[in-house]
Structures are given as structure tokens and as C-alpha cells.
Length: 459
Image (cartoon, rainbow, N blue to C red; front, side, top):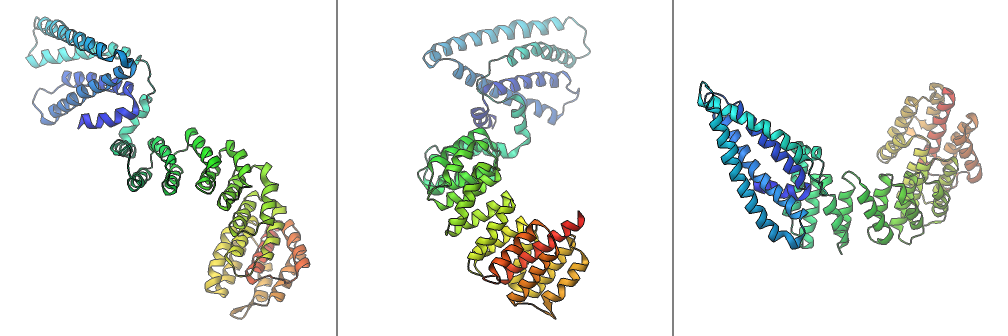
């Protein structure tokens, strides 16, 4: 078991930390023997036995690994033979001279029992090993982990599981098995899987590259991952570049901004849309005008949806006007218009509330309007204003469905409350009238106007 565990851990963490830990275990063994109880205890003795077995095997494995890494391949055979002879000779001399000599010397003292003699013996051995540990610690580092990180493995089962997976996977497997491997690494969620996941980005199959990118987005982000994702962004058009753009934006990789700006002109609509969102997340002002231009000119639904979401993130008042204009151009009742209404509401500070309103509006329009009024009240809209609005929106148990009547309510609300959003909405209504203003659109504008009135009151 110790050999099996040591083998796959050693390959990843490097030999030096394990040499140090196993040598510390030798000192621990000496200490346990020095303070052994006078009566025989199974658990105590079994613990010493288990540590001795694991320590001796682990020390041999890690020292051999360190030796093979540090010695040039052409010299390994000769040096190995020399080391075997010398180490065997030295071990024998130390055992005979130091070990036996020390026990013989201790026999001169009148200990009350043989157990006490051996307790003193192991105590002396433990003290002798301490300065030797200082020599071990000074071993040259060979691209291995820091000791603290290796110790952290003991408290991170997912890292141990990931190391096990990485050493059990076949180097050359079928697409089905590679997909299963990626899923296992994703479920483990350890940063140790980074190197192997990056290797799957070279797969010729889209499904594998996409799943590897998805998994990379769920582990701690590193510089190596950022570089790999930027390569994917540059060369993965019409493939997985859009996923790379999304992850780079979410992880705030500023170095990716030039590539993201360049990809705005890509014919890949998936990529173009994700680049808009990522550039907004990165607050890349250099790209804002280009995003607005693409959004207003595009007729592609995906580009329009992502453009609206990015403008909501950018949050300029000019973008509110663009969203109003684009929403009016779209047919009523479509999914795209609903997306733009959510972006309008988000920019107006009512994103969550209006999203819930839209969902409820599809099921029960009266309840949806009541809910929206309650939410406006909770957000600080004056009670007097809500009291005035309620009879204008609800006629008994039914809502007002006449667009012209609702438009006049919104226009009157805008005229009564000053503010940037109200000015934009008022100008928009004067320009378009009731043209293509569906109920949801009107309620969105009304909610934003009322919300701004609450902000003006608080000021």
C-alpha cells in the first residue's frame, strides 16, 4: 500500500519533499521507541511497525527517484552500482560500529531494565538524526512542491483522488474514455488536474476540448491556464474559442483584451457574443464603441442578446437609449425582446425584480402587476405615488391592457419625476408613441421611472 501510494504521489510532487518527510518519520520512530510504555500495547507497537514499513519503503523510493533525476542518463548504470556498494558498506559499518557499539557502551550503566536501556538508545539515535535532517533539507530543489503543500495533501482528499486518477489514466485512450477521464477530474475539482486538462485541449474532437475547457473553468485559475485559453481564443474560431473568451472574462484576464477586441469582428456569432460580455466584465473601454456599433447593426439574435447583456454591464446612460431603440425594433412577444427587457431593467436597477415579474406575467398578469408594485414599494418608491399608480394599472381584478392608456401613465410619471432615465423614456415615448410598445415593455419603463423617483426622494 505504501509503495502504491508513494509511486503516484512521488511522480507529481517530486522526490525532495518526500525524502524530508520520510526522514522526519525516522526521527518520529526513534521518539516512539524512546517513550515506549513498559507494558505491551498492540496499537502502539502496530503504529511503530506501520510507520517503519512505510518510512523505509518511501525513503528508498524517493531517494532513488531523486538520484535518477539528478544523474545524467549515460552515467546512471555505473553510478548506481557504485552507490549500491558504498551504501551497503556504510550501512553495515554504521550498524556494527555505531549501533552495536552504543548498546555495548550503555550496558556499562546500571539500568533498572533492558527496556530502559533501549529507550535511552533510541533517544540518542533520534538526537543524532536531527543534525542529519538539516543536511537533508539543504538538498537541491528539482522542480518539486513546497513541503507545506505536500503536507496539505493529508487534509485534501480531492487532491489525493485527483493524483490517483492521473496515474490510473491511460496515456493514449479512446475519445469515450478520455471524456470519462475529464468528467472524473472535473468532479474532483482539484487544481492538480490542470496539467492533464490542458493536454486535452490538443484533442482533435470538439466535445473533448469543450469539456476540458469547462473543467478548467471550475478549478483555481493560473497563468498557464490563461496562456492556453488565449491560444484557444486566437485559433479556435467556430470551435471552442467562445468558451475560452467566456472563461477569460470571468477570471478578469486583462492580457486577453487585445484578442477579445480582435474577435469582435469574427464571423463566429458565438465568439462575437462572448467577447462582448467578457470585454464588459473586463471594463475594456477601448471596445465599448465597437460593441455598441455591432449591437445596433446586427440582426443576429445571439449577437443582439449578448450585446444587450454587455451594455447592461457597461451601464452608461447612452446604452439605455440604445437598448430602448433596439427593443422597439424587435417583434413583440419574442424571446429576444424578453432578453432585452431584462437588460433594460438591470441597467435601471430592477434586474431581479423585473425578471420575477416577467416569469409571473406569463402565468397570471394581475398577480404580476401587484408583485411589481409591492417590489417598487420595498425599493423606496413613495407610498403616495404607488397609491396613485394602482388604480391606473388595475381595473378591479384585471390589469389595464390598452397600450395607449399605459403609455400615457408612463409619460405622466416621467413628466412628474426628473432624472436621466425618465428623460430618456419620455423622449423615447414622444418619438415612437405607442408603436410596438407591448405590455411588458411598458411595465418595464414604468418600473424604471418609479424606481428613479425613489432615488430622487432619498437624495
